[in-house]
Structures are given as structure tokens and as C-alpha cells.
Length: 75
Image 1 (cartoon, rainbow, N blue to C red):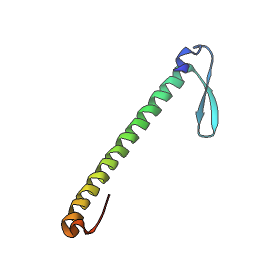
Image 2: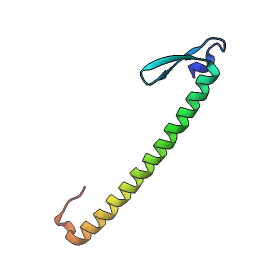
Image 3: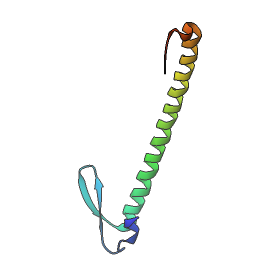
């Protein structure tokens, strides 16, 4: 990561919302790690929802094919 190559004495610009703030390198790395963990957690939650929806769609397909046979095309 480019931030790891930065000079520790120089403040770095960190974007929060629409504004950039000058903060220390150590603080920026900590905030980035925290934000990354938050995003990873959100992605995992959304992936769980996707998996649940896909399973529900498969179950509905099975039920519809059982009821209507080859009279419908769900693919």
C-alpha cells in the first residue's frame, strides 16, 4: 500500500465524507484498518443475504416445477 511508504513525520490527507483532514500516518492507518473491518463485516452480511435469497429461489423453483411441470420455464 502506498500509505506504508509515506514519511511518518508528514501528515497525510484522509477523506471523511466530503472533506479531507490532515492526520498522522499512524492515525490514518488505524482509521483505514477500522474502515476495512467495517466494510468486510458489511460484505459478509450482504453475502449471507444473497445466499439466503438464492436458496429461497431454488426452493421456489422446485415447488413451481412440482406444481406446473414442464408447462413453465424458470431459467
